[in-house]
Every structure is written in C-alpha cells, then in structure tokens.
Length: 411
Ligand code: SF4
Image (cartoon, rainbow, N blue to C red):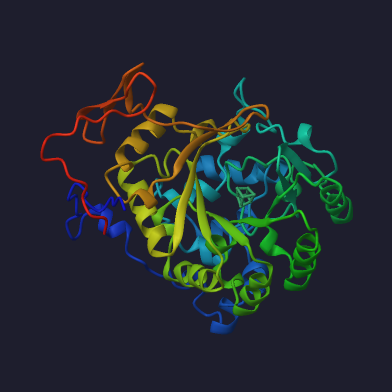
C-alpha cells in the first residue's frame, strides 16, 4: 500500500497564523446577549431574527463603510441582504478586511457589471427541461428546491434566482421534477440544491427524499447546503435521524474561510457524520476572503478535523457584479501548488472552472508534466525537483532491475 505520510515536515509553529486559523472557537451571542439559550439555539428563531435591512445593520455595525451602506440599500433590487445573528457574530466590525464581512455584506461594486459577466453563467436555464430541474450532464440532475437561503452570499452564481430580489419568481414544481426523473432511467444521481434544501421543514424534506428514493434507477442522492455554516442550529438530531433513512446520501457543504468552522459548526458536522453521511466541501476562490495559501491550507486541514473532505475549489463564476470578489486563475493555480504535496492528499480539493455558458466543470491543475514523449515523461514534484518516468515503446513501464533487485514485502 502506498502512503503519503512522508511529508515535507512543514509543521506550523505554535502561534503561527496557520495554527491560529485552525483553532475552533465560538463567537458567542455578541449583540444578542440577552436572548435566552433556548431561543439562540432554535434555528427558527435565528431565521426570524436575521439582519435584512440597512437600519438593522447600522444599529449593530456602526463601522459600515459608505460602499457597504450604498450596496445594502440597493441589495433588495439584486440579491437581498440576510445574515443570521449567529453568522453575523463571526464578523469583526472593526476590520474592514474581515473575510466574513466581504462574503455577506453587500457593496456598491455589485451594481457594476463587466462586459463578460452574466446573470446565468453556468447556463442552467438553457438546460432546464422542466422548471427547477437542470439536466446538463448525462447521468445526473440538479433539483432546485427553493429560492431561499439562511444568508445570501454576495457572489452567488444563482443570484438571478435566490432571494427573489431580482424578480425571477421561482416556483419549482416538485411533481413535474420528480416525474421527469422517473421518465429518464439514465438519471442515477440527484443533487438537491437551491437556495438551500435544508430550509425545508423536516416533514417536507423527508417526503421529497422518499419520493426520490422510490425511483429504482436513482442510485445516489446529494444535498448541497450552506446551512451547517450559516445556521448550525438547524442540524438537529431529529433532522439527522430522518436523513439517515435515505442512504446513500451525501452532503456537500460550502465554506470559504477557516473562521467559519466554529465549535458550533464542528458539532453540527459531527452529527451529520455520525448519521453516516459522507461530507464534502465546496469553496469559491474569493479575493479578500481566501486567496491566500495559509488560509486555504488551514481551511482544508480544519475541514478534515470536522470529517469533511475538501472537494472543490471553484473559480468564481463571472456572475454580474462580482468582479471585486474574483481572484485570478493564476492565483488559484498558485494556491493549488501550495497545497499539493505540502499537506495530506485528502486535504487537497480539485480546482475547477464551471465553463461559462453551460460547459460544465473543467479541472484546472498546475503543470506537473514538463514533457512527455513516446518513451518518457518528465515530471516535477511539489518541491520543484525534476524526475523521469521511463516507458517502453508499447507504453508499458520498463524497469531495469539491478542484480540485487527484490520485491519488497507488502505491509
Ligand atoms: S448559500 Fe448557496 S445558493 Fe445561497 S446565496 Fe450562498 S451560494 Fe447562493
């Protein structure tokens, strides 16, 4: 068995930024100190008390910049403002560069649309045979469940639809969506997304999952959600008990910065993992947030501590009004180069670009193959050292055994 434990010995010194990012903390109740424990831990209370207006925001965050204030006023015509009290407490109000702040507080730059930006960069609407269902890949479908999220990410690729601020008027028709899947035996994998599927009530979610599970050719169910990050209170033992009835069921969470992985989030993810649900994470590469190798490495390592496999890093889609948050592809490649080989292989996600216009995910990797011809491949490793792998003319690897050659015993 191969092992990748023989690393570079790059242990973070205690107190380094890597180890500080990796600490699990609770941000506590902050501004909501007088709220009862029961209310604070009640996901419906968190939803009911979200920050949704500039007046509310200014009251609890006097440090709002002119760009943020103007953006917040205009947000309701594009992508609404909503932040749960729990998630708001992760913002450091005195820090204009706080990575949490850049993700959820609107800015006036969102009203600038570059020539190449689009309202539907992944071409979902043009691959939608019935409302709320996207069939873009041969054997799987995206099943949009709702247009609501616990909080709204300012770079959301579905901002045309979620929150309904832009007037998309999304009305999924579950019966038609399910019927389409029934009629298409090639669909073996259904991804529930939105908006956030975990905002449905337990009963509604269970009903939907049982209808999908009853379709013989559906082998595999997935849920894409940011609820464990924005609203960990929603991951109740009751919800986990219902979800575990529908295995194989995987969940992809979405987190971008290690500070989002609090003690509350770690516990919520632990409940999902204990319910036997394999967990993966999708991050979006964002300027001001995670375009830094130490941040990405801390995020990836912390995710593994929460039993979550870092799955994808997305190049930020060219969604209208997102230029101020978009990091370059060069930066993304640099980050991948700083992860591969420098940390556990399980911690290294795949960097992808969702090809604009509906081309699907395309993997993007730093160049490790320096040259390749009929009989050899020249490779570079994570340290920049160069190696040759020699192949015979028929493509089979050729080894020249020395006289002392012996096959090592397998462990
Ligand atoms: S949680 Fe997902 S769907 Fe909702 S706003 Fe954020 S990125 Fe968009």
